[in-house]
Length: 172
Image (tube, rainbow, N blue to C red; front, side, top):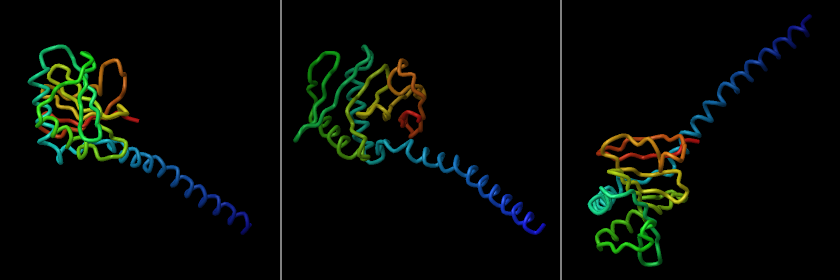
């Protein structure tokens, strides 16, 4: 009889421990997900002046026309911007090149956050990275509802920075 009670008690303890571990697992997964969700973030605070300088230049020169997509590439000594629609390099003022250089070096610090695109859609200006999982977006009229285009079909997470700026990343 004592042995039967010991077996039951051991089973109950095992069941309680197993339930506790199973209940904790989703919490651990959630915390891991939350920490990696924003890993691609641009360091807006470190380069706010440069992001605003570049945003103002592209707003002044390309808003009001058709949507534009620019490829940003970094060479050994310089940074260049290629207009994918016109299929030509864009001649930029020295202050814009300097700001883009600082953004490229200091604005995207995570190893997989390689700054490579600037997109202009209406009043929205976005700074994208190579893997297309994140954009720093200036959207003065509304909270972003997409990362790149409506055709993506990606679920996104949005974090407001302030002044029309947002971090936008793909969920999961």
